[in-house]
Length: 303
Image 1 (cartoon, one colour):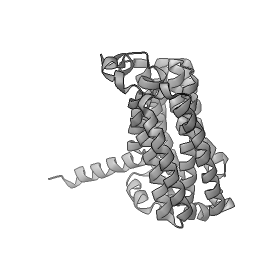
Image 2 (image 1 turned 90 degrees about the horizontal axis):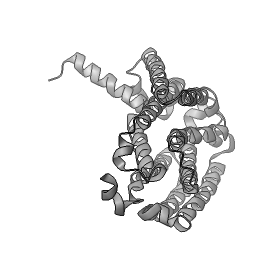
Image 3 (image 1 turned 45 degrees about the vertical axis):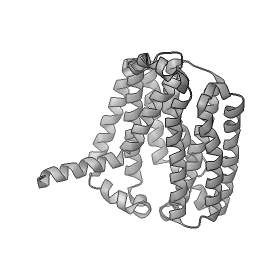
Image 4 (image 1 turned 90 degrees about the vertical axis):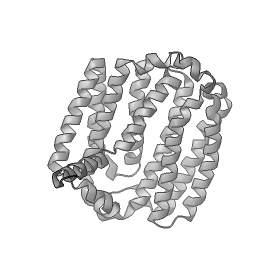
């Protein structure tokens, strides 16, 4: 049996875990390592990548910065989230704003500390990244287009740090990045549709608030069609480079068709939550599908 003090501690722990979106950070860490093994440095043995101390420091710096970004975003959106996500907000409020801010500064310090092990350029890189995460939460996310674009770019930046570390400038990497960027852009716009009530109440000038739901759906349709461009290139021009991951991209075409069908029938928040989960599932599935790139040589790479 847990004492009342222990229960309170666990509740606060899960509250902080919810604020920093620990599950999202775990997926990002896995994605950084899988992209390093199969995309950025496919010629290196898995063991060498896994025990690369500089890569570990970059991943830790990224995770700390992203966690701090979630905290500051929660801090600024606390009132809006009471309308959009009342249950999650009540859990998040078990941790005081003062504790959240303390954790925010500690995580930022840790991010820069981890980056300092790699190089001074890494310190500058993550310092700018931390600032942009704050600036996005404080100002940019309240405006249409620029807020969505910034959110999508900031989501891809941690992979850019690893990309620079390995110095692999193959075109296929940029095509992969474009596909991911477009999927995240769609997710951000769906989130705006999902949160339109709270955004409208608190003066956030998001695309759905300023231009309406119908225009937002047209934009999502356009981005969905645009997403087919990198998919087509990866399946045709870069078929050898992506190996068996082409099955994921074929499935993505079917997934986009389902997404668009649900989109144009969507009328309330629950529909947009379903759309959000479809995109989230597509991104997570894409992360684990990376292992299909060199599936036939996986045993050799491990040894």
